[in-house]
Image 1 (cartoon, rainbow over the protein chains, first blue to last red):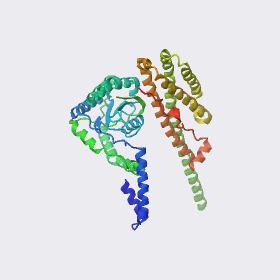
Image 2: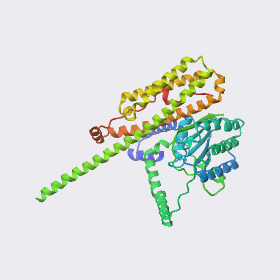
Image 3: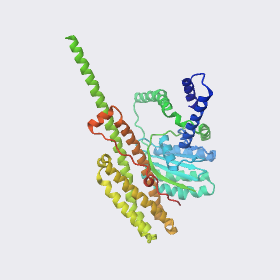
Image 4: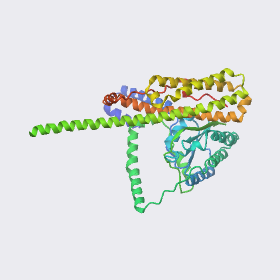
Length: 264
Length: 199
């Protein structure tokens, strides 16, 4: 994005621009960069492909695979989406503010049911949070979320057992939410109906999404110029997943700030 | 004859376009205002949730910290005045800047009374170990966070509404049909942040 802007600027100034405006431009650029850095120190990573997104690389491959499998099965049976994201640091962001933006961006939970749960851990800050969607907060209450953090996860984390803490925590959340939502099987439509769906999806994927991306890139792209990239984290979590079925894809759930925060 | 017809058609066409554009802008304003109302309902919801939590909290704290009468009374008083403001009605508060100010003042008064209580509580280790208190504390924290989120969303919806209302030519339609600029929550000290509750 920066390069693009630079080219744009150069075309404005003309090819034979003198060094002085260039330096000025560099200064402005630096200012913009610094601004975007201070405002969004930790950028929202793109939506993960699995239920566990371990950006800090603290979970063992076995744990990650197990969690992904458990959460995939849980979504298939109950439609509730639980996503666990582990970051190395908040990088100065406020915990609650960051996690709700993350939950909304990843659209965890089904649209209408809002039955998403986001579990975030920030290793260096020794902070964690459970965010509950509008629908799931009725069942996984703030109180229950706080209890899970306090009594289930924090004791394991205190002993350095990140793997066990995350596993136990996720299992406790599942136990609390189990049976509260049913995965309503879509009524089997006629084959022609399915065909329409497929055509519709193809349309969305090849036309609408690229269009939206292009539009977004134009309007708010600059803001993310100084952000970190998360590409490598995704490929690692995908390779360690080791199962082909399922995977996470946000259902459009909405969050209203419910849940609990804690530390260890 | 022919020229007259063309002129007539042109005038009718222009009026038609104008009417369609007015209808479109008017409906757009209605949608935006509905969105603001929806967000406001959520704000009221989460504030009500806080009001509901307080009696229990006060009772629990009373049992352990009976000599903090002043702080406790301040919370009870602030709660009383905040609950008096709420039933004024949705449209009323939104379209009346004074009522909105009052609402905001009452709620932030309650916020600061609560945060003072939470500071005082630090002096009572037995209270902080009490399961009931811990439960109420997590519920209060969750509610304060919800308040922050819903206020932010309300402000976003109002900003969108206000900027549309003030833009030309929508401003004329807004004036014609009585759409007014709405108040935002100010990022005030008290209510924006959850009371600092440390374990």
